[in-house]
Image 1 (cartoon, rainbow, N blue to C red):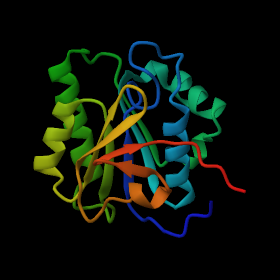
Image 2: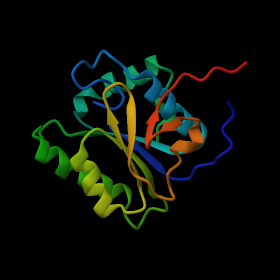
Image 3: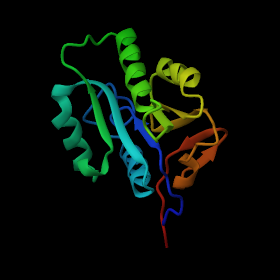
Image 4: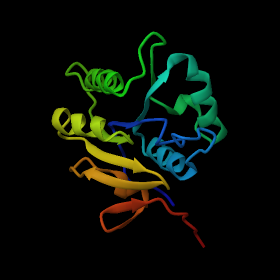
Length: 174
């Protein structure tokens, strides 16, 4: 399938719970990786924003590489400094700070979509990045559009929607 939409914005993906299963990181959500690849094909500035320590950078990049995403295709990979604590509240504060820096006024880019499994991060983004489309990732590669905006480009990737939920499905072309 040829994607016709061009994208000139930032699409942010969390890693754990979005690209890999949170409980078992050896299980890669291959359909989500294909979604990520479709965004790079469209020209989006795909960014990985993860609460993982920066010492895991090679592991994150190798996982993506194993599934066909070359590090050069990514706009940024932002991982937590090793000294930072892991607690949920700290992760929320850290991610909020990183998202705010991505959308600072000195940049000519905006975050058009945020893919996250943490509802608190999405709630923060809903208040602080009002133009961003927010996508909640759940187990089984079920995506729920938590907040739809005019910047939602997920529907341009060929993903079917049922009852407000996007299910990543295999596409077969004849």
